[in-house]
Length: 115
Image 1: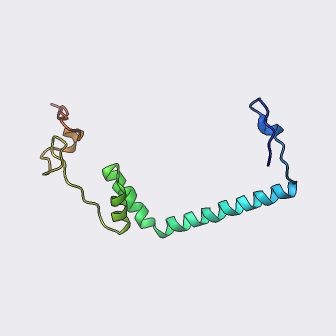
Image 2: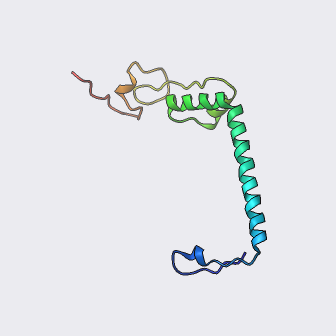
Image 3: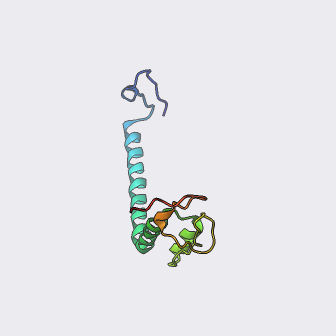
């Protein structure tokens, strides 16, 4: 409906609607039904796919990011496989260093090692 705007921050208090209280209640009921129906739908989807959700969470813990193709791989129940980075950050043969020796950025220097 049409609303009359006030200039102050409390403008919601002075809004005028050009429909009846019964129409407002019908709108509220319909919105509540839509929200509740889609809440149940979302829960059902998550409960049905809980193993995929956990696998995706684990992949994010291991890799920090996953792309769309990797999400599809996880959804099929497969493990994602990434090419190893070299010490210079280039994709290729696995690095002989540990993950604490470089941040994976190209040209990154090894982190200082404690004595």
